[in-house]
Amino acid sequence: MPRHHRISVALVLCGLLSAAAHAQQRPDSVTRADTARPAAPPRPAEAAKTPQLDFSGVIFANWNYRTDRAARAQNRFDVERAYLNFRMPAGDRASVRVTADVFQNTTAPGDAFYRGWAFRAKYAYFQFDALRGGGLTATARLGMLQTVVIEHVESFWPRWISRSALELNGFFQSADLGLAAQIGLPGKRGEIYATVTNGPGYSSRETDRFKDAAVRLTFTPFASATGYLQSTALSVWGYKGAIASRFVTGGVGQVGPVGEGLQRDRWGVFAGVRDRRLTVGAELAKRIEEGELGNNTVASPRALIDSTSTLVSAFAVVRPLELIAPETRSPLAAVVRYDRARFNDDTGPAQRFIIAGLLWDLTSRLSMAADYQQLLPRDGAPGADAKTWFAHFVASF
Image 1 (cartoon, one colour):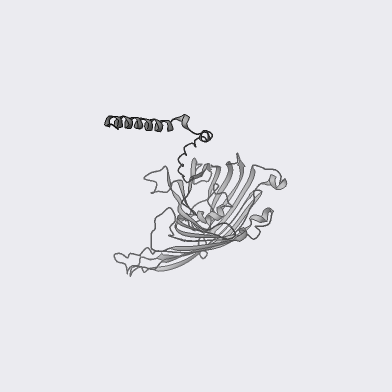
Image 2: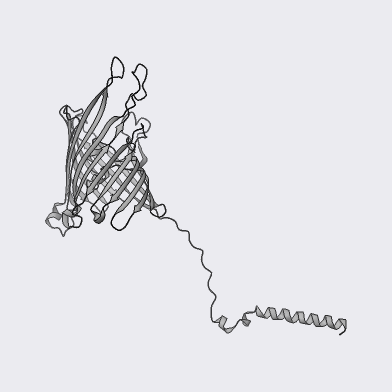
């Protein structure tokens, strides 16, 4: 075949191959089976999973009017507390809680810098659920956490009316920095709660090398029953602590530094019943402490003194209309409380505290109370009688 004929045939073959390839890409060249099956839509990008934040809070506010002679009819509006709770999971079986607490420093000279309200941390801890579900549960916490018994008592007593007796009388604070473990007994028969903490409480940094250990055993023997007995709780707790001597570093003219700690022990029992119609609670607590006399010098030697304080408290919240007619839901309740604290069982100074009032639920999350509170120092205790009328309000959200 002549050369120019071979070139012509090659060009024709290339053109045919190009046309065939173009025909395969045309829509009308798609087979009937392919036209019956629509193309799958593109898969959307998977959304990022963000842990859910659980936010809640509660605010306490009041107006109070003092009628005792020392106060000379003082009155004021006050926001006692506002708690903002933030909870979030931190992976499987772990979570974090941070509670911000609004407060006002009302004691000189601490209020010299700022006399308004400020936020501070009340709780800030990690939690790991070692066992959950089934019968036995176990939880560990690390950080700024609940102390051994105050929050337990406040699950019966309305904290927005007044602080619990233990906290009000300075046994220890409601939160501290440390480590805690909680074990729930099978069948909701109770719990064991143990802590090891710094000791000064959440409102102060660590002040010495000593740590305080505490444990509470709570039994709910009628958890499977019905009615009032179902919520019955019986608790016994103990607190073993120590604080540094005020002569721990020694000083000019002193005999020398004092390294051993001073005893700071507490123990108590609590019994309560929590029902909407009737809530009652009673507790007995002891505080055993060592103190120091003298200046740790040759002329004024250091001497230890022992003191034991006793606290008795009882309270009740009653909804009389619901007691008479259990099928009704009444917003009205009456509240009473009586505390008796003896500061030193040997020397005798004592203090009594009385609360009486009426509560009214304005909504399911907003309540108010009109109550009277009286503080009565007795047997040589310092201070004068304090008589105060309150209009308390609490809102949870």
